[in-house]
Every structure is written in C-alpha cells, then in structure tokens.
Image (cartoon, rainbow, N blue to C red; front, side, top):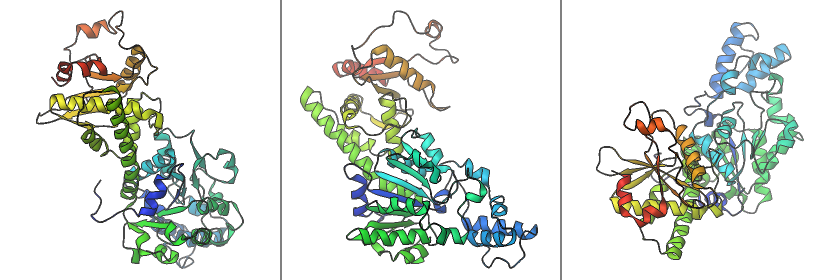
Amino acid sequence: MNIAAGTTIPANLVHHLLQTGGGGVSIVVGAGTSMEVPTSLKSASQYALKAHTELVAEGVILEGACPRPDDLAQVADAVFIATGSQVDVVLRLPQNEFRTARPNRGHLIAVACLLERAVSAVITLNYDMSFAAAITELGGGDRIGIIEGPEDGTLLRLTNLFFLHRSAHRPAEEWIMRSVSLEESWKGGWEELVTAQIGGSPVVLFAGLGTPVPVLVATVKRVRGAYPGGQDRIFLAGPGAAEDSDFAAALNLAPANYIQLKWSLLMYAAASHLVRRMCGGLLDAARVIEHQRAYPSGPVAETCARLQQLDLVDLGKLRAAWLLSSEPYQVEVPGQSPLLADILLGIALIEGHVGLQARFAPTGIVALAGDQRESPTVAFASGSGHLNWLTVEAKLNNRLAQLPAGTPRPGYAVVSAVHGGRVQAASPPDIVRDAEEDSIIFERPLTMLDMEEVRANSELAEKLVA
C-alpha cells in the first residue's frame, strides 16, 4: 500500500499498540470505514437522502417535514412523528447489503489486531456486518466477542466487537437512529456501558467519522479527565484535512493527534509496527539458532526484511500455513518463533546457493525470484517437533489442495522439525499419478525434502529451482 510521504502514526499510539500484554487501544469507527472496496457501502447522508425521497414520494411524510433530509437521524425523527415508528426508514435502507457486507483490508487488519490483542475493542457505529465477516474470514469467532446488544453480555471475550447502534440483524425498532436515542437515551443505559470500554482504554482511535456523536464526545471528555495527559490519548483519522473535520473540532483535537489517512491505509500503517516487531523477533530467534547449531549462514537479515513487506493479515496467514494450523490466521506465540526462524534460515541458505531472492505469500509458498521469466515456487512447513513425516505430508497436501484457483502448485516442499525425520511411504500415494507425471490432467505429486538434507547438500537447493 502506498502511504503519503511524511504521514506517520503518532508515537504514543504505536507505543500502546506494542505494549506488553496488549489491549492498550480501542478503535471507534463510523460509516467511512465501510465505503472502501470491496465493502463499497455509501455514506449515511446518501442513504438518508434516498430514504427521504422515497418516503415523501410514497406519502409517509410530507415535503418539508424533515429540515435536514441528508441527516438519517432527522429523517427517522420525521417518520416517527408521522407514524409512531422508525420502521419505515429502516425498510428503505439496504438491509441485505448491510447483512452480507464484505470486509475490506482495513476491517481484516483491525480484526488481526484484535486477535493479536494489540487492540482491546472495536466499537462500530455502523449497522453493516463487515467486521463480523472479517472475524469469520480469519477464524476468530471463538476468540472475539461479537456484541450486538445488552443481552449479549455473556458473549464477552478478552477482545470484542461492539455494535453501539445495534446491527442489521436486529429488529428495525431496535436500531439506534433517532435523535433522542443518539443524544439522550444512551445515558445510564447499555450504550454508556459500552463507551466505558473506551474509557478503560489508555488510547482511543476514531476513524471514518464525519459528524460529532454526543455519546462519543462525552466519552472523550471522560477519558481526558481519567488519565493524566488525556489530550495525548485521543486520536482521529480521516482522508481530509484536520481543519475540515467537524469531529476534530468537537473533540478539540491537537493537530498532532490527527492522522490524515483513509481507513485501510491507516490500519496498514498502524499494524506495520506490529509486523516490524514480529519480524525482528524472528530474526533474533534465527541468530540464536545459528549460534547454537552452527548452521551455515545465509542472508537471513535480508530474508526477514522481505518477509516484513507482508501486512499483518498476510503474516498471520503465512504463520498458519508454515505451522500447518487448522486456523486461517495464526497469532504470534513466542514459543513458535524458533520453528518459524528455522524455516527462514533454510530459505536464506537456499537463496545463497541459487542466487535468487524469496518472495513470500500468505499461502506459505515462496517464489524464488531472479532474472528468470518464471520464478520457481516451493512450499515450506514445520512439523513443530511433534508431527511425524506422514502427518506433515498429509496436512501439506490438504493445504495445497485448497489453494485459490489459478495458484501455481509447487512441485517441492521443504519441511523442518519433523518428529522422527523422513519416513518413506510403503507404496506410492497415487499409482495413476506416478504413471502420468507429465500429464496435463493430473498434477505432479509433491516431492518433500527435509530441511536438514537441504542444509547438508547444496545440490538439493539447486534441484528446487531446476
């Protein structure tokens, strides 16, 4: 992702993202976070104008009954006065689109931050389910609480997604939409309890918010009063200039605490500090292994630097692939660092032997790039010290069978930390495929090599790229 020169994430925000034990940051998001592709929803004002036009045309409200047709709350107020209910407004919103909204990269990175416990809570003012979809995509349903209303208190986890205004799955009358609900009804109720979550976070980051929200402005004042130096603990991000943000003005935000970035770029830039720390830890572990085992040294620092080009989501997916995890996203676990570092050392050694550079993918497959027109690809995996050879082979083949359509399947895999070392199968796994190795119908069977064999024999490294 391209980030404008000079745009940085404030040091205090980075510090709390990286703090030991996690949970130093809460993120509060509005409609702007769901407008980026592929979520591609519209702004609240666009939905309000469309609903108002239909409501007037169908005679639900009179022309002029709503002073601000671009304000969804005021449209809901006018409809409630006319009908005693806000249902007619909700019916004119794209409820199915809200329920089936796809996550964009910002959503996915934010959920990865929840899984890594760098962020304690995401609090969304939106009705759409894009964040919930991101949790599903990364396999976080058992680790992140999805709280859509006060009755969901038993679903709380260490990290949580809160729908402050309810979700599109809730009945129309429960959506927090009318002015009285936004400005007064939350006081002493569940919404105030949710915002206490914000108050309990040392740092709060607001994103995708255009107009001031009373409950949030009140919460900011409480945060500033509760923490020394509270002015430095509130951050706001948006695509425009700080002076053009009504929300920044309402928060009385210091200029240094405004981050001029769109949603996905914001999350990419913030999480890149986590990626850098994680890759630095892997490099440290690799140096320890080099010293302890006297492995031949390859350009492992440069290899780690290229690994660091992945974003947080792709790094977590690559960890899952290399560790043969059943989850699509594997969080950082300190005890696993030597296993991953051992693979990186092997990749660095192969790079040195064949004169090519590794390019990493979240699938765990590495392309060895150079001057060749086509870069050979190799899969890597770890037995984690307890999986035997045949189990690793089965798990690896299962993963490769699930590669997205069109992804080249590697012919070789290099595996490390396999319990008991290599075991030869009693018979070929697929006699037909053995007979049809050059067939355009059957894929070539995967040839597995032990990492220690590759270290001991440079000719095997050459074989990988032949």
